[in-house]
Image (tube, rainbow, N blue to C red; front, top):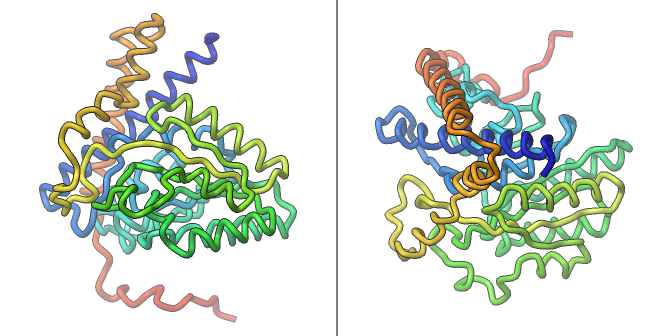
Length: 325
């Protein structure tokens, strides 16, 4: 690695730590009943969002699942707006109406936060179709879990994207469990990249616990899509360290399995590699941690100071508002 490469690696480490600390804060706030409803955290999978997001242009579009806090943060949605949304405050990115599973921000072209399994894939196909018909040089990236592979929308979306040669990158975050169902219990063919290849889509897998490997695979795919190469598909093999959601008793995974995967923590792996190469001192690491902690603290303060929506506004936005003629 050259100096620029090491600088970039430190940036990716910073990005992953931002996601980790925000998610840990969400767990804390949920346990204190400050955040309610459903909550699905991304702890363990940070390398996927950090690696893919670093390859995108501001005008590209991102579609995600209900485990999307990290994607939104790294796409540019402020941490305060994310937490305020989870608090149900009007200062949130969706005025507190979406909550944890429905983060959305048109300004950063972050189109959800979709609670329905595979629900984001048809949206991504639609966004990519609009870009192709308009002649825009954009890429739409769609994140989803391996559980989406069992849905009809997955197959319909891949088929149309390939048929129409749309500028879309499908990113399957394969964390091995769709809620409590292991992949091998629901799919006869567990090589998901191979399934995508069946639709004549360029596809391959990458180590989702290695942010540099994710970024390399994503950059290759994004560049190909942007150059007119049609849809591409990445299977990013990763693992969530915590339960499916805060309601999940997690009786379906062996604790030894979880411990083995935690030994491959993407943040620790990159940090140790940089330290071994002499490119990350203890002072550097503490500085990164302090910067992230300050950001998360400020986000909590912003959310805490927020305001619930007035009762008289609860029916607002049920129908689109028209400007007076």
